[in-house]
Length: 247
Image 1: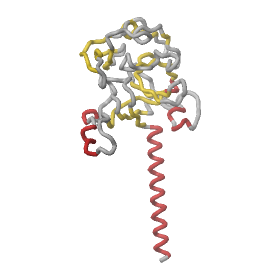
Image 2: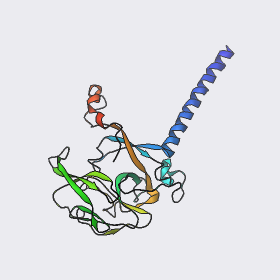
Image 3: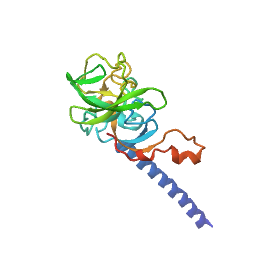
Image 4: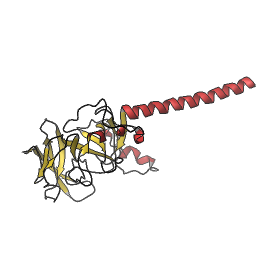
């Protein structure tokens, strides 16, 4: 009987050890490799939809205190840092509180002069090339937007949305000089994005605030099925977006 009890006890400890190892592996992967995020707003339409779930590579830009869960080990700067490229879709900690996660597209590098003139992004005095694609209806509203392919100076191409009417402080901005060690980020939904153009709310992104680069979607859900509506789940998943790369 004693032997049987001992075996049962060993089985419990084996289970506990397995769970601990699994948690440690998950935390290690989340900290140093890939971290999952979801998209709660439409500021990155049409690239990212509300209900998209994606993986962000933590190693792309190296590691800072914001790479670690809850910033538990504070240190200055970044280590093993890779280069940030213009056009990257990046997750960063909002500089105003260093806690809130934002996701935007990096359009300005340190030393760049950034300005939006009549809705067109200008980088270092040159308007960015864009090609009109089509008129699109904004999901959930009666409004329409014009969809463009925007080509950044390094050749990176991506879709953006732009409304036809000029909006103050969004379509015509001051000239911004990006400081050293900082970046300028904008949403692809240009007229519905709080980004670096809002200097008091977001402003320039310090390099150490970068969490990682958005790489690919692993799930996407359109919100049409409630948790208990199991029979609707297959129709609420955007199957065509699963495992798509992020441009």
